[in-house]
Amino acid sequence: MMSLRLALILCLVITGYVPILAQAPGNTGFYGNSRTNGEVCAQNGSFMSETEVNNLVTEMLDRIGAKNRYVIVACPQLENCQATLFQGRPYILYNPDFLGRDKRLSFSNSDLPKVSGQDWETLTVLAHELDHHINNHILNPLPGATQHERELEADESAGFIIYLMGGSLDQATQVFATVPEQGTYTHPGRAARVTSVRKGWENAWKKYPRTVPTSVIVDAMKTVSIGTQVWMTENLNVDRFRNGDPIPEAKTPEEWKDAGERKQPAWCHYENDPVNGKKYGKIYNWYAVNDPRGIAPIGYHIPTEEEWQKLINHLGGKEIAGIKMKSASGWLNNGNGSNISGFSGLPGGGRGSDGSFSHVGEYGSWWSSTGDDALSAWVRALYYRIGTVDWGSLGKGKGLSVRCLRD
Image (cartoon, rainbow, N blue to C red):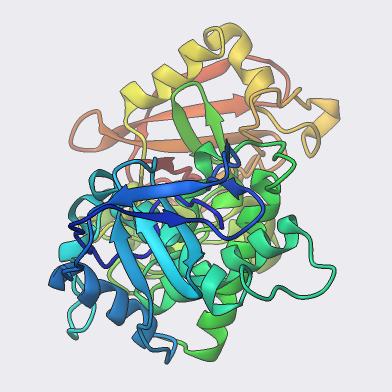
């Protein structure tokens, strides 16, 4: 019934003209673009299965304990893919070009394959389309269920399946970046769909917990597109590196100073109060930021000095960018910004190399990944009294906030 950006696959090549008809009142694409009824895919007769595609479909269904009972047909006429019925049998039609390298991925081994961002987008759509059949959306939908509700149900199941395949929440939701924000008469808007995927992913996480560092779990709703960049809208608040190793916490001034002198990674809450961590994120020294194990979640990185400058240039230059980057509340003496950019900068303060805390409510400072010299690195800062963005070099043993940028 609905064409989705990559659906199930089981490439069947046909000889002899056999048109496949969608037995449903109207067909729509993953992004809500409408298609005409009638003949969907006309090819030749005598089916021949493509083993790689069939294996991928079987592996996905195995994750939820289901059998592969679908006829999956290559259909170059489609933009991506579509779940439909033909002569009472459930079909998945797909454009071979859209499938790309995904058909060669194998999730049956203990070591998961290396899956790129585009592949995760494809697999999410595939999981979504599969659910239209699993939940009987085409043959026998729930009485009174709207198409919006069916799409959201399929999105939720897609999130569940992507988790079971080893994908992070960010990887499960990234396909929705180009979904219409306002939605269409057939499909809900982007926010509702991302919420459904997140619900399914988190349900799977709760039921089948796996050893995944919290730093790889990203809520894609907490990002904002500014120009061509996608920034997180909250400061980093993780206590483990990307590989799961703990980042040492340094509470006392002595512990913090010692970590800096030994050039070892460290983090803390402002004034060692976890309440500040919930509001401002954690404070890190530069050695944590630059550690090769990676502090940023998968799919993100610590911005370079050049990337910070690109953001500021897009917002009109350092003299006015600060107002646009500062949150609309939370700053001392009504030093709030307009937050037109959506960056939502808060004054989290910082920690000196000697372990002293200062300036919460007054300024927010963020590390770049660009070192200045052996002892210093470049930073960007916002102040409560002015609307400019400050730029300078600070000692690597100091403690500042961290903001991540999508790869």
